[in-house]
Image 1 (cartoon, rainbow, N blue to C red):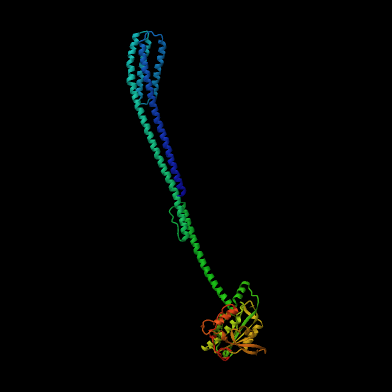
Image 2: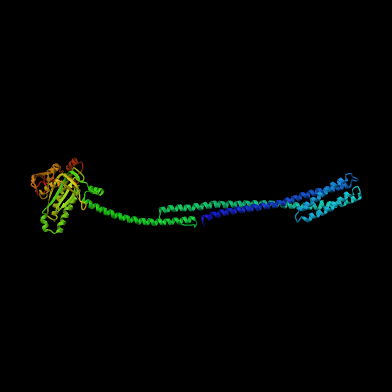
Amino acid sequence: MTIRRRLASAFLLIMTLFAVNQAFQWWSVRLRATTTATLDRALERQVLMASLHDMVDSLQKQVSLVARIEGSRDAPEARRLFNEEVERAAAAIRQLKDVSDAGERPAVTNLEQTYGELAQTWRTVYENLGVERGGALASQIRAEPLSRGILVDILPELQRQQAEQVRQAEAELASVTRLTGRVTFTMFGIAMVLAAAVAYLVPRYFTTHLSELKLGAAMCAMNHDYRLTIHSRDEFGTVARAFNDMAEHVRHARQELTAANSELAARNTEVERQRHVSQSLLLNVLPEQVAAELAAEGKVAPRYFEDVTIVFTDFVGFTRSTEKMAVEDLVRELNGYFTAFDEIVARYGLEKLKTIGDSYFCVGGLPVRTPSHPVDAVLAAFEMVQAVRERAIHGHAGWSVRIGVHTGPVVAGVVGIKKFAFDIWGDTVNLASRVESAGLPDRINVSSAVYRRVKDFFAVESRGRVATKERTDLEMYFVNGLLPTLQDEGDGDAVAPLAFTQRYRTYFAKDPPAFPAFLRARPADSVSGPLRSP
């Protein structure tokens, strides 16, 4: 049943109760009116009978009195008045007959006939007055039984009957009044109960179903698989079904969205993985800052760096090895050495630029400017020499390494639009290459510019002026090891000596990035042997 039908049924029920109550009120009014009319007629008949009794009694007494008076002068006037009284009594009897019911009609008719005879006798008495006294007395004598019959028998019986009818009418009226009162009260009570039931059940029906809808909405918000239970086929059931349909559509939409998000997440993961791969590849080619600038701007502006340290390495004996070793073995050996160099360069904050054949080229002090790059480059060079020696000990190619270090200004930038590379240019690069080629195996050869920057940290051996390939004499130095004054006997090998660390902090306001443990307290030796102090 729909809500409209429920409300219409409730309204129809209330209107039906109102109509029934109104009908009963009309019926009770009619019943009381009928009973009251019956009572009124009975009372009217009582009044008429009482009046008639008085008139008959008065007329009889008057006749008796007049019959004893002889020769009255006023006999005609008295006769006229008497006749009027007689006629009034007759009219009262006719009126009584008119208001009598069928059960009373024979007795009233008898009264009317008896009174007619009595009235005729009374008229005879008046006609004989002053004419024949004996005739008047005889008529008066005949009238007495008739009047006594009326006054003693007929009227009292009629009055008794009327009194009984009045009692019955009064009792019926009281009964009708009580019945209508009870029925009215009962109908009012039923109407009130039904109205209260409608007033309670209809809002309760609405609030119950609205609460269920509200609770269902809250449950669906917490549990997307929850569905409303449909208890009715009215508008609330329609709303619940529509809500369930909407929730089902939302669930399908969420599933599709989840699947799309999963697919998108997978794609994003793949894109992110590819981005990381490309970023890693880019960072393998370019420094991080340069790669970021290239990604943001699409190009890299050339920059001038007034102070960088360049490290060149070159393997001694590599050319002879190429004649004896297979190509794949040669490449594998180079990859092993250069991988070790990559790890060392990263540990000391240097930037690898490129490899050219068996030559390794890195720089310190760019793209992030730092004042400690000469010392960091020398420390990295020591670890490179040590790495080459350890690989030779473990059965790899017995190569030695020449390392040249030079400090000076350069211009840095990215060249090309395909397979671009970060590179540096300037005389500093050429001089670093010449310093490397003028060195000795497993030695660190530095220029005078580097010497001035590292002499307070390392034991340096002057080589004097050394001629390069271009017949140019350059002041060069071998770095043999850590200064004895910076050695601390009590420190472990895991960290730099305390004196070295303190001086590093004093010069550069930071801790050293790493430290070769084998540099601690090394004994002096020949140039080609172990690293030595002067």
